[in-house]
Image (cartoon, rainbow, N blue to C red):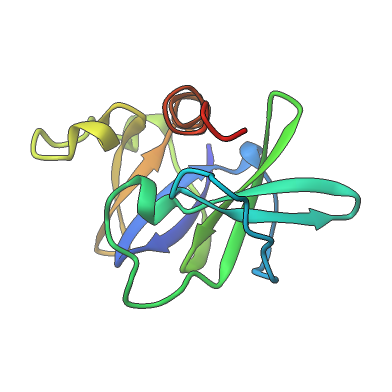
Length: 146
């Protein structure tokens, strides 16, 4: 499996490369009135409206020390979403047996949509299950964004 690794709040995360439609520098976002805090704004990318999501806010990991500079775009249920991240570091090839269950001390919210963890370049990378994470975001946090 191929994993896009990225940094957020000083931690290493990853997602299956099949989810990633593109990665780009963050442009000006248009604010969305009355949106939940995890909605950073929207932008028009090649004629598609992309809802930018503040992943640091969603994971409650801070992110206040520096503003995200990149956005990883994904498609989910025929809609475009962008995750704000600090940096994209690599595309990593992993064998499925390398992925271990999340440690017991991981935040329960994160553990609910993490596929597992893997040791990569001396760091612990949490691999996110994008569809369950977006499903959770849409059902709980974004339902009232209208």
